[in-house]
Structures are given as structure tokens and as C-alpha cells.
Length: 236
Image (cartoon, rainbow, N blue to C red; front, side, top):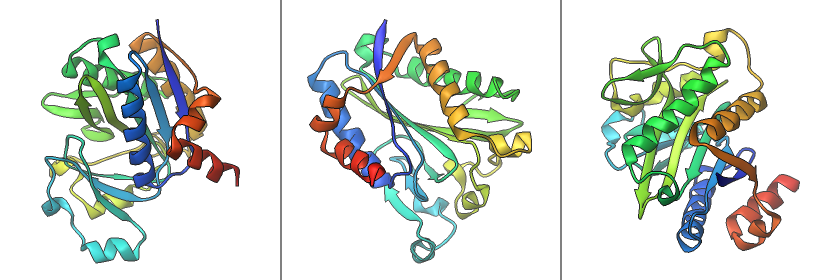
């Protein structure tokens, strides 16, 4: 059974988390069959993937700056999306050589993690043919966008828990004009304990990928500069 090092970080700036991903990616490439799962919440940010376009941004970049919403063009697949407080963002850095060298299998398995998580909150969610991510009632509740290089993964998923869905009015989410977005709290009518959702995500990740998640060793915090900096900021 593969071990996955679990790294939970509180609110982070997107660019810092992206830097952390790249460092973990390099580490995984140099240390065969090493796997990570980073879970965090981001400060407000709109990201645009490789196949994205600024045409799906509905407000001027100057407005975003005034509202303290970052705008970042990145190297994942997919179009435009929003990340922010109340949303669980997960970055699995997995060496698929230790699982299955199949990108479609990986995406469908990642979707299964979220579908199983939502079932624990009595939310019936699933897929829509031809569209990536997890959907319920025709609305997207979890966006996904990944990058795979030398069979090591980057980027991942964004699950709306208590997310302020008003932020999505600034964009055409994932470039899809005829479908909206939703969140766990909107569907349940209650603010949800995000730590409970994280616990369910980790449990489903272990079950679906057939792995064991363990806390990242302390030595890793000395090896990865961005991770050490994040830990220091959380302890301040």
C-alpha cells in the first residue's frame, strides 16, 4: 500500500502554494514512489489554465486588484476558475508509476474521491459526460484541473464548502456558459465545519486510491523551503 504524505496548510496565497507544488513535484521526481496530498484554503484568486482565455473574465483586471483578488495564469489544464476562503483546494502530487499510468483513470478516480465525500453529507453528486469535475443538479460543486509530467501529477481539485459563490459572477466558470456552481452549504442550508469535510476527503482519498495518508515528516519541512516558510507563518 502506497503512503501519501499529508500536508495541511491554513489560508495561503495561491502563488505560494504553486511554488510549494513545484518543489514537491521536483522532490517526487527525485525520490521514486513518493506521494503528497496538500490541502489548503486560498486567499481570493482567479486562475486561468492552459486552455483558458481572458474572454471568460467578466470584470476588468483593475477591478480584481481593487477587490484584492489575485489573477494568475498557470500551467494546469482547464479554463478559468475561482479559489477562495471556504473552499477546500487539494493538490495531489502523485507518482503514477506507483499507481496506474493513465491520466483518464487518475481524473476519474479523483472525481470518485469527491463524489464519495459528498455522499457522506447526503449530497447526490456525479459526472456529466464530456465535462471534468463533480456536479450535482446540473451545477458544478468541485472543479478539477491537473498537469502530469513524467507521470507525476500537479494541481488538482477545488471543492466548494462554504464558498461565497458571488465571486463566480466575475467569470464564466471553466468557460461553460449554461451551467452554474453550488456549494455544500448552499445545498444543505447550513454552514459546514470545513475540518469535518477535510476529514472525509482524506478518508475517501485513502479508500479510493488504496493508500494510507500520514503526516509529512518534520524533516520535509527543513527540505522544502516554501513549506518551512508556510509553517513559520502559521505559527506566528
